[in-house]
Length: 146
Image (cartoon, rainbow, N blue to C red; front, side):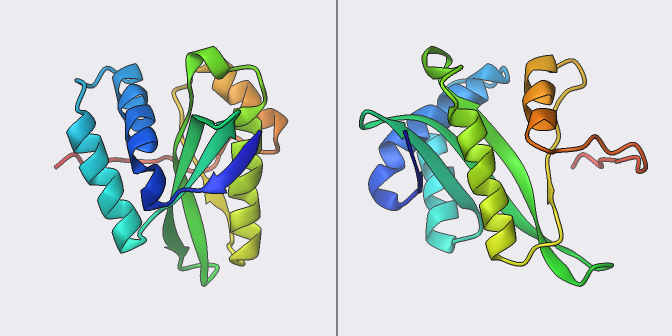
């Protein structure tokens, strides 16, 4: 398995995977929208996307967005998306994608990486905790839907 940074030449495969990821979260299929959204992220370089490739097939991805820690006066990253195709799960792709995300944080001198998942997503929570992520029990997070 290989973990590489996504580039425009892999946009079609990435968009298909991203569309499947969105459908997993009960969103309507929109392959064209996925390609447009991700193409823009790649062109504007406002996210970092890594692909997991196994036998020349893109089987997973993670997407990270930069933010900043005012208190720490450093960059930080939000690991916003992590997905591996169901047929490729349990092969270590998610673990390797998480390791690559950690490497990005270290290479960019970041203060932290952060992610969120549903409390009932026990498989994901187990994976995150087994790779060193810790559940935040200090802060309450609020959202304002627009």
